[in-house]
Each structure stands twice: as C-alpha cells, then as structure tokens.
Length: 316
Image (tube, rainbow, N blue to C red; front, top):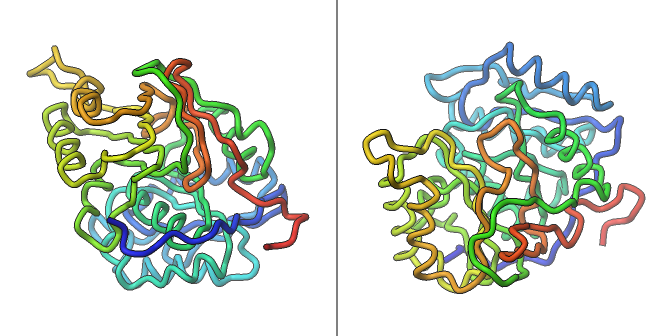
C-alpha cells in the first residue's frame, strides 16, 4: 500500500527545441565516453545540456555519497534555467537517499523527469504522490539507442502526437482495459514492498521489465508481488523485455513463461507480452501516471493523453 494518497494531475511543461536539459547521476557511476556520445543525441535534437556538479563522480558502485547524489538532483529541480531532467544511468543508489527527499519539490518545480531501472520507484512516487507525470525512457548509459527510440522520446517530451503512437507487442490474454500507467523494473518494485515507497497498483495498468534475472528468480519476484497484493485488482499487465534472463540450466522455461505463470492465475484483465521497452536499444518511452489503454487482443499499449502540457499553456 502506498504511503500517501494520489494527487490531482499537474502535467510538467513540454520541452521544445532550445530547452535546457539537466543531467545527474542519482544512482551508479557513469562511463564518461558513453555519456559524451549520448549527450550528443540531445544536442543534435536542439537541446542545451547542464550537467550536475558530481555527474562524473564515483564512490564504488555509486556515483557519489548519498547526500551528494540527492543534492545534485535537488539543485537541478531548483535551477530556473533547467527545464527537464534526464538521469544518466541506473544501477543502484536512489533507495539510499529517497527517505530524505521532499517530494513536494517535484510538484513545485513541475519539471519532466526521464529515467528507468533504478529510478522506477522515484518516478512512480513522483507521479502518484505529486500528480506530476514523468517518462520511463532511455537514459544516457548506452550509445546504441536506435534512432526510432530516441525520436519517440523527443516527440513525447515535446508533446507531439508521434510520441503517443501505440506500442505493439504480442497478445497474451484478450480484452482491453484503461487505467493510469505504473510500474517499471520488477526487482526495484519488489524492493519497495513494505516501505513508504511501495507503489499502489490497484486499478492501474502495470508494466514490467527486467534484466539479468533468471526464470526461477523472476518466479520468486512475481510470487512476492502476488502475495503482497500487488496483482490484486490491477486493470491489466504490460510486459516489456526480459534481457539476459534466460537460463542455460533450465532452457525449457523462458523468462516470459515464468512471469506469465503467475500472472495468468491472478490477473483478470488483459496481458500483453514482448512490448518494446526495457534494457534494450529499441526502448520506447512511456508516460508514468497517465491514462493508457491496454488491448490484449491487439497486443498493444496506447497512451490516451499527453505526458506534458504545452509550453504555451498556463499551469492549472
């Protein structure tokens, strides 16, 4: 159960060309060479970039000490010349400082946040606690991002119709359902169960992805989701990519099979498989906290509203 009630929606402002993107590393350390090549994606799309002070730091498997990483993120939220924030990479680390973070900063700043993986809980809490949607999308940790994936991300942050094109995967179970989209990395979602940052999934369309977790361990994570009530009353489930999750020892059970064994016993709504999001080069961006439609018959996930508010409109 989530720790606080949900807030009325307050869309972040769109990021037209010429906007300044802030970049920070709230989790693991970045590869400076890969970072430079990925920043060029944003430069080439017409954006300016402002890097957090400790973006290229390293403290073991973290980019810096906990308070430093949090402060870097907060500084970008407060900077009036920064219009949106992209997380550089995942790994681990946000959970170490999240209890010391004031979520009201996000509603006051009303800036678009972009990330995934370790950022899963932060993004979901931002959307549900503050009412400010954000984007589960490519960060700056890989330079093999496909052109179509980056093009979709840019369209989504600009509020263009192209960014709302449905994602198409494989049919799992029939029917269709609508609801606010929540979810992300399975292991990170499970790690939040029993904490103040547990994600409320009831009545929502839940989306899941994972990397580097074998089928038996995915089964264990899904059973914990089930027994914690996270699958009770979900409107539907959208499955993305399970990267490097297959087992040489048990090749007869795929990662998707392991997840679906649990889902099909306790989810009444539609299930869609193999959607193009997650730890892959064709990671298509999604809006967390917005209304979507999941169609099990068509194998699709469609946005029903924009993540961002036009920069020409006034805040509500």
